[in-house]
Length: 638
Picture 1 (tube, rainbow, N blue to C red):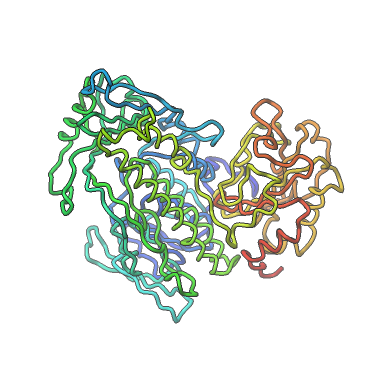
Picture 2: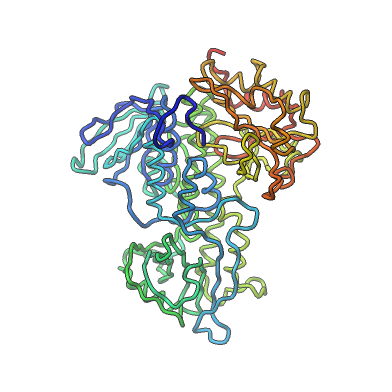
């Protein structure tokens, strides 16, 4: 994190100078008549999107929520490694790491062969495979995640806050105008219940859950099926003689059902998903009148010979497993050549069981994908056609989520006689869990070839930075101050693209990496100069970082092109944090770890949502221009 670029300011550096007079907040402040983006819903998807857009003072953003205020407990709790990488870009990953429970091991329990009425431990597995991410898999109250996003919004230049007790009643799109074509009718759900307010928006994003009014307004429907199986979930403070209560556990009994145990933050709290009864095809779980006591009784039957003594039920809920998906995530049918104006994200467009821990994670990844695209279009840096890529990219990933979770949910609820897999000694639920570790970590996402994802022509130059997958960080040393760090942690959720230039064997003056730097800095037709405005810093749109193979002390005496030590900000201060080298202190060699070609080097182009867009040789100036020219518009005034 860098600060003081525009002058010294005391206090918390996370609190950025206020730059927007768009509106004031308060109980008696009127709602705006026009906004650029209206977000419906203060769940994980909505708040993640709002936290991104709050960073742009020139974008008028509004987020509404029917509830009277933030949630305090319950709901989702799992934060996978990919989401933790995203949290790093927002600046609160370390807070989550400090406060959360880390899922280091997962234990598997099944009927004891000697006494099937009792359960016994049959194995363990490391929950985060070695080398898959520098981040842990964590468990923390969803309400705390909301609070962290709200803090980012409050500290942003726009000081964005939600408008609670307001929900979307309906919306209408006027295709005849480009100026705020979406008319949204908001309805008050608080002390002035029933009062309505009309707001016009350029774009609307429905993050308003499975019963989304936004989705309904654009004719979207959730299609899928239900497993007709009732489950209960409870957060409890309890004592037990079960030995693995502070580890994630998957438990299957001989005849009483299944349990998933998830330890929670603080050392005492834990969550239990408890299988209850099978439902009839037309039956809903609400008709059974299940209570927390039913869950506790079922848990004690399933866990025999162990018992659980519940001291406090913090939160509980009953649910039935269902898997549903919309046919699109925006208002445009697939066969129309039209740019979208309304989008859905999270539960508004896909629902599934909570046991794979993907709901909150995939929802936030939806809006992380959309946020930078909206900003880039609203700032005039890209044609609105860019927004078509949101539904195209995220629908495919949601479909894969539904299919994988569908299979997992049925294995978790399978009768005991179906526990073996093709004659293997390993129970099916254990084998499936191990096979799905990349998926449950959020690391299986790979975007297909598109205008945002280049061909794999030069993939061999950096096999570990696979095009279409997230940028897999690795250790480096910052040359200026010998700071050991993760290279991926330089990326913030600020809408900028990154180019990581890895120097080849030759890295002195006249080498490919030097010529790349000189072209980017001095050629007015280069991708850096072409897309930034005259009053913007050289790294305002594309942030170049260089990684050399020498040790940091060898680099201290080397002269570097200006773009690697640029003068930025109101005071024209020099930035010394763009040059890195291989970590010679034992954390790992990034060239070796990510398969970067040592002789030739390469450049890795990374989107603002941390996904690799392209891998190119260092001298591929024209191919880089051709690739980005399809995405960007030339800056006005250049």
